[in-house]
Length: 183
Image 1 (cartoon, rainbow, N blue to C red):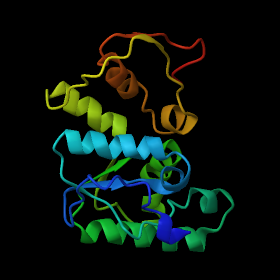
Image 2 (image 1 turned 120 degrees about the vertical axis):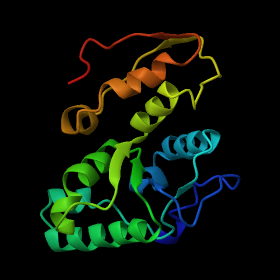
Image 3 (image 1 turned 90 degrees about the vertical axis):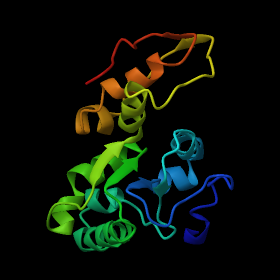
Image 4 (image 1 turned 60 degrees about the vertical axis):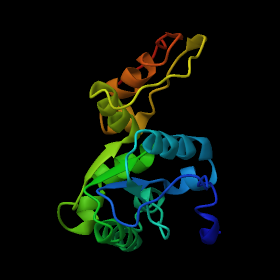
């Protein structure tokens, strides 16, 4: 149910009413891939980054877009964009690859103009914080790790290096590329 969309949010995470950083968690994050969005908000909190999110967030409309329900897509896009705009968001962080693709590549078509915020993937945001010395991964992972490039992230919006930059900062990790990787 829509009223359970924020059930995943850890109670210790502070959400600002107004902030320049917004976080879009999406349907997968709310209902299926909860560890992904829990990790993202914990990383934002650990970095000391004030952020906001929509307590009435709607789907990014990717499923509606692919089946051609464009009138509904426009309604969903306007709801979400206006919600983030009202909260002062200048940079919208997204975790889900499909949502990242939809928001970056399609929302402006349905919003009828440039979005009032920049859209970036969580790995881009964390990689930039690491590069600035504002975020450090301290928990080691002793073992081998690989990374699957989601198609909408790697081929759709060309976010390829940042996930690897974040992984490279994990103490003790033995990173191994898959035979079929990147694009």
